[in-house]
Image (cartoon, rainbow, N blue to C red):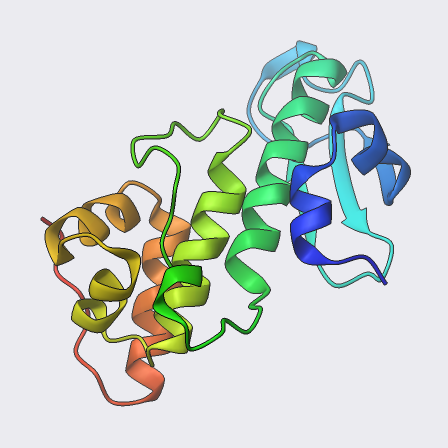
Length: 166
């Protein structure tokens, strides 16, 4: 089985080889253009654990690229790895303002969530371990609705209040 961080760092072609890819005709709005080609794309990891799909565009190539980005994000959100207690290993050494299309975004998000998980979803403790402020950590999480929901669900399971958007 591949390591999560290795998967997140793979180039698109390598990641596609490690996924099952399905192309299909999407239903829904779009009129006559929607159902002419198999442009929708669903990618599933080979272990079958995580899937992402995209049918937003007429182009299969654009849908595939977007599905790959969504798959990386889903892997980053759903798979946790243990972090050592050493606070130096918990710091993020890259930039904090990454767009979702940046190749470094999924590893960044995965690291934030790993540190939060290690600190039992306590934002203050995680921010200290990351070497940043709680506000900066909350703002980084709030930019991704899926990550935001995942954090609040994890916090709710251990009876912590939901984070409020900045």
